[in-house]
Length: 225
Image (cartoon, rainbow, N blue to C red; front, side, top):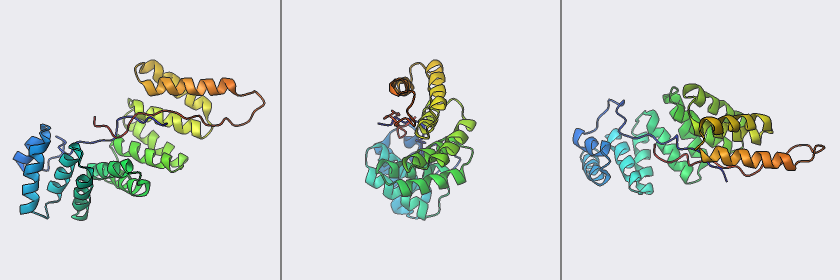
């Protein structure tokens, strides 16, 4: 089982985002009062059905309350209305990924990266989507881009090592996981993956060829930060 980290979920009420659909509604969203945020944003979209940002924020609040179907519908509406926020497409891709809809998730993450190329979360999640499709070279490219933007990401380093292992680059994977266990001793996926890999390498006879890729671990990429 893969364990992928918690880099990938972006709050709709990002303080760096200057757009406001309604100051009061967004105040409750920013303070994690999701029931009140949902109530107020529903009033807004009833009054202004073409307010793309309000649909996005409503979807985010509903998602935080576990209403995934409504969340997806509001994200899709915001996209159809023309909202070009990179984090909308990141969170849209996240929902698709949760549902196992890898194709739409990949397209959403590609849009997120195109709109916000300087955000490591987009590249990380696109790399994750590529890995799940077996597109390992493309996954490696995106994970490296994500780490270039933010080298501190434990989840991205773990995922890059996993991709290396899947490509047969066991020494590269071992190096990343070894360094990760030293710099982040409490990051359980790296500890587990390093033990799995080293155990598999010890069991392999010297004359054997490729190593069967073990089942590695990852942390959830879909958890809020």
